[in-house]
Length: 190
Image (cartoon, rainbow, N blue to C red):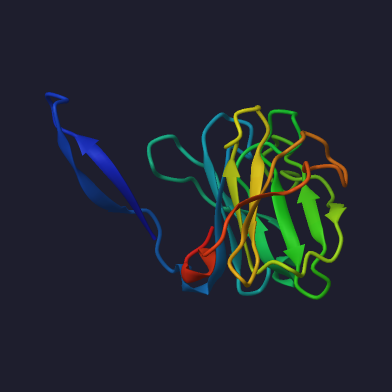
């Protein structure tokens, strides 16, 4: 896995893009998520789910590298989408949203701000049968109200914005708003 980033020259008048290898052996990963700080140290972390369904946290060091990984939970291969970027619940901690493959139910995993296996609380069901969508993205707060928002795309290509409400219930999002059509042409999402 590589980190692509811009490096300023010594005079800070320009620079260039560079690729820095930050991990190897990630071909067993089914998902890579960058939700922000989940360990409570104010440094962004990376999460991954391996082919066995284990969720791993790689604590950020603040310089583009990560500390030793630790396992959070198993059973994450039951989800066909795991997304997170920002705080969905209004408590200042990064959260995750996961959609169950069999039912389409959407679950919230509230961030606790703790490092270790207790980084997320028990899941909360926030939507039932979200089967009308084939792609999702957690984009942070794009509506400017301080709450993390969520995007969902239909197979026909309509993109919907779900504005966050800051509630950890079935009212986690305001009613959807269409962002536009034609988004089925994109094959990399989230």
